[in-house]
Length: 138
Image (tube, rainbow, N blue to C red; front, top):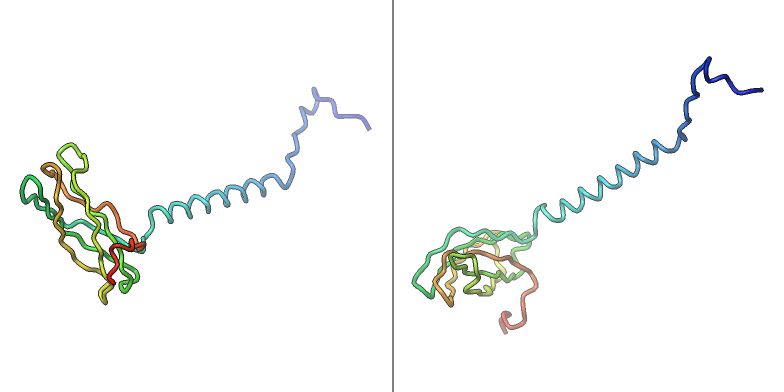
């Protein structure tokens, strides 16, 4: 049998393999699930959530920072890194604060930092459940 004349019937349609749309749909679904997982790990709820409530510049070499820490496991001690920044955003003081285990999921703390220059702000850098040995009691 001969081919159809193109001038009479037009050019024949190119056939797409039947598996191609299914494979593309699966690939898009897998990539979408991967992006969702990474987004949840990065921006989803954390085991330890610190929040700065306020700060007070006491004098040229001291700042007081008030913060709260919410933990999934309140009985487990955590360490929080509190820092003081000058007006340009340069770190001028830092302190590690041990938050001991408690019955409450959320605890309030106030800590005082000594600074190398006048602080313009105080904030919480972050918290971790990996408490250094020198902060542990006993």
